[in-house]
Image (tube, rainbow, N blue to C red):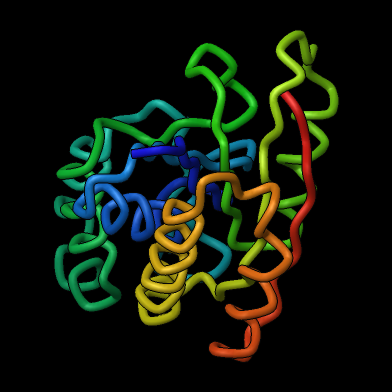
Length: 193
């Protein structure tokens, strides 16, 4: 393991956790986060989401939703998703509160506004180490099917980065190859710790 990775979406539930689970299974050093103010899960209607604070254990969410309406949350895949999540880590974590977790070499986001939030946060932190961090965005819709595809693509991209001595020297070629092969646009920026 050469590099340390962070997977980031809005609520640290679906896209970031799918990628976290896949990278972890492949032995990569990975963590995951969300950038939202709260964790939101679909509810009985669009106007009635289930809202939790970051740090609320996945098991607590699972038990609560299973009590509320087991059929609904099984049918929409939320219970299966939470089951996967609790096998990966205890609870969703907020990116903006992660400074104590150390530095990451590569931060992968799955939505443009999350990418912007991560960059803004990194740029507002003190940067005593002046250590580079690659922040990339792979746009992925927030549904179970797209999260599965996005997770596999994130794993492939991270394995490509992991296979290089220094991503700083090869990132343009890695991105160009990825975009050509998968017909998906990647946006990236360099930040510092």
